Image 1: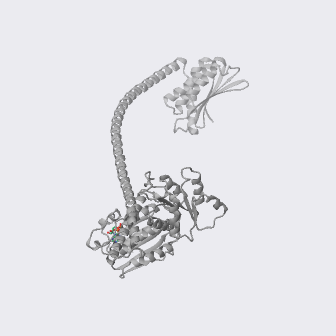
Image 2: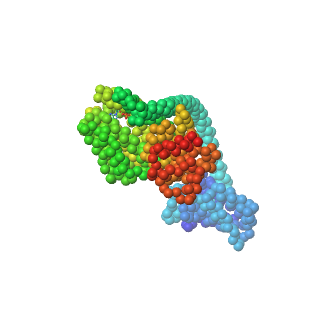
Image 3: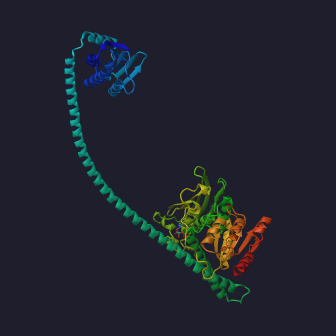
Length: 593
Ligand code: ADP
């Protein structure tokens, strides 16, 4: 604390002195005029009240801690309670300065007023000394002089206020103008936005309509394919059955020519049945009626099976090489579907390769958690322009080389559909004259599938259903997690004129039943997810489903629980010793009941 000036004020007359000296101190310390006035006014406000009751007060001006301070100490009893005039004065001073406080001692009242020094002002001891000397030299003027000074200051303050008010008016006018401009711009922008929005909405509506039309068309196509295939299958199976009957060695003897022609009929009907079945498969895959039966798949066994069944199809000049997939960990996928995809690709390779080799390889991409399977041939290849089209239904490349090759144009589209269900990425790389490579990237497990795969619920569920009976065909639902076994049952049952639906577990079976009530169910007991016993329980509790006869097929010995649960089944057959005839007879028996 460095004192700048100290004096004693006595009586009300000295209020002017205190005011004047305060202003001088502020001016000497570098305050601008408005701040000098603030400081002086605060001082005079406080002094007015203080000197009204106290006889005298010691006034000290000092520089302290970056601030100018005025300390007024009055001796004797001065009313200073919160409602006193002095307290009012201090409150008024507090509004003008940074600090104004009042302390009551035993026999004295102290008021401390302070204001931060102007920015950048930091008077050293020399400066303070000089100010002190200057102030000591000047003698306070008389009341009239100080009044004159006060008046001049007031006028200056009024002028300043007037300037501020003018400036404020000008700013207001400007703001008003700007506001109007902004409003106009806003209105214009809103109009434009509204128009754009309307356009976008219309565009989306049109898009929605288009996709609805597309979906409708695609659904209609699938529906048509399914219904037509169903209708066709019955007469074709009838032709096959009757031909088999006539050709049976135990039937009436035939001439050589008759046998020859009947064999032709049999072959053609067999081809037709294959086509119809392919169409039906495709239509089902398209409408997401095929549910993959996820289970661990032994790739070595799959490859072995393909090697065995396809080698006979290779011409003598073509080598079929099937790799050993030893480096690939077990995959969880649908074995039946995977076999079908690979079989289609390999059969094509063998069909369209005159010499060289057709190769199936497998490796594992651990980072991507994908098995990478390739089917490569050294055949005639596929031109760039056709590489996407070969995946379209019924598309076949038309050229001289292929003219005599039989086929339906359904193999690749079906393979691609199945790949979609299993989350497999199927790509083709081919160069005419040099051969083709089809690459499958198979997810290690269903949980590795990225993006929507129909088989994991990503597909659109279908609401329409296959007719319960096409041409009076009884419909059998085969529920088994073993895809190969389901496939075998399908062949047996279809050959016998039954219509077959498949489900890989109890839940899929319930979906299939909800979509169309089967005439009978062939049920495996042990399945991942909802097993056979559980499904039996659900069916028994459902009045609509209870009457559907269920034939249980199991390889396991039944324990007491299982025996109780299967008590209401139409029959329990041993999977291990089951022969085709037994199953077909049992089914016909329950369907007729
Ligand atoms: P399909 O073989 O029954 O005609 P796909 O859908 O399997 O029907 O194949 C469609 C067409 O794609 C075939 O007709 C053929 O023209 C062409 N194609 C398929 N695979 C090959 C291949 N490995 N090499 C050359 N052309 C092929």
